[in-house]
Every structure is written in C-alpha cells, then in structure tokens.
Length: 256
Ligand SMILES: [Zn+2]
Ligand SMILES: [Zn+2]
Image (tube, rainbow, N blue to C red; front, top):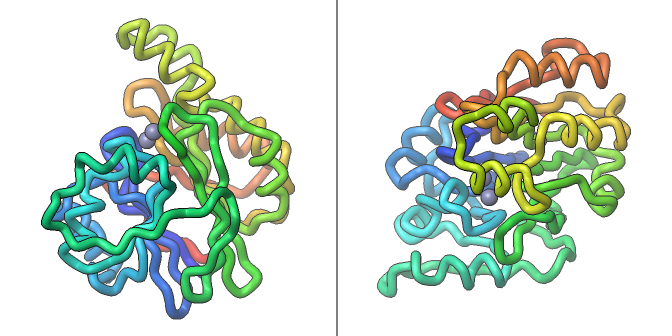
C-alpha cells in the first residue's frame, strides 16, 4: 500500500491511498480542474479512482467532490450526516453513486478494509479513516478538537500515520484572528493544537510506525520546522520518517 497527498490545509485537503488494485481518494477539497491537475502529478487518471471517501461537509474537504464524482463516475462514501449537510451542494442533474457509511463499522472497498473513526469536530457526523491492505495499516486523522480514548485504542498498532498538527497554541492566541475564530479553532470541536497531536503519538505504539506525516497545518499559526522538531523530540525518529504535508505541493508517494 502507498499514500500521497494532493495538498493539506484550510485551503483544501485531499489524500490518496492505493494498493495493487485499488485507488481511493480521501476528501476532495480542491475544485474539479485543480483536483485533476494535482492527481496528474502522481500519474493518476481521474477515472482510475475506485472511490472517494468524504470525512465531513466542510468546504476544504468537499469542494470538488460532487462535480468530480459526476463527471468521472467515481462513487462517494460518506456518513448520513455529511450527505444531509451536502445536499444543497449537489446539483439535481448530477448522477452520483452515493454509499452511506454505516456507523463506525469497517467495510471493504475491493481489497482495502476501511474503518471509520468518529471524531469530535463541528460537523454533522464526521468520520476519519483507517485503511488496511495486505496486513499493513494507515490512518489519516484530521479535523478534530481533541484526542479521544476510542482514537487511541483504534490506532494502537498502525504502520503509518497522517495526523493533524493544526496550530501552535500561543501563535493562535497572539494571532490577529477575531476572538470567535480563535475560540472555534481551539475549542473541543475545532482543530488539534500541536501538543494534543504529540499526546496522541505518545499514546500509541509509535516505535513500529514507519513514517508520520503532519497535516492540516495552519498557514498563519504554525511552523513546519517547529512541528518536525516536536515530532522528532517526542518519538526520536529519524528525519526522513517525519513528513509535513504542504498546502500547495502535498506530498509525494510514501510506501507503507
Ligand atoms: Zn479541514
Ligand atoms: Zn473541518
């Protein structure tokens, strides 16, 4: 199995998980044409995708999803809550194959086992996902306000981890964001601050993880070098197994 990202941050998120036979797009937060352009960087043709999974209804995760799915006939998997919240975004004349995710029960897309993980976030019914193929597992976890016990239990033994490092607490407090936005981002249903993400890493078996990729960094209230250093200090991992996903350039293929 391998992973890449088309980009991650508040201006759009999209990730790819691929095994020998199957290619999945997780979130589609860039516009239709932008998504096609970015997929091309990794030699992925749009109609090659087997499915799109949506984590929740926020714009930075769904922007191009429905026009893309309609045009290239790629089925979408999403929760009932996400579907409901997106309804007004879906043109009546679109022909889309929707698959509603049933609670937090694992399901198969070809040979990839997908485990939905509920997370605390200000969306209707948000899920993040863990993927398993050929005895390897990767989890992609963004958009959550805090680390839950369920998350720690689910991620105990994984081979690769994409984890939100949204902001540095003090940078956010001292930023020029309006107070309401500061409260939203740092709240229980907002985004992970760096030390909360570190808490997750320390709570799971990080020694067996091949690589860790930080995602959804705030452009204003975080710093790539700081995030890398925090992960290195907490896990004592080599530099090449610590990655930060870029908003513009995403990240190139990483094997799991
Ligand atoms: Zn987001
Ligand atoms: Zn969100």
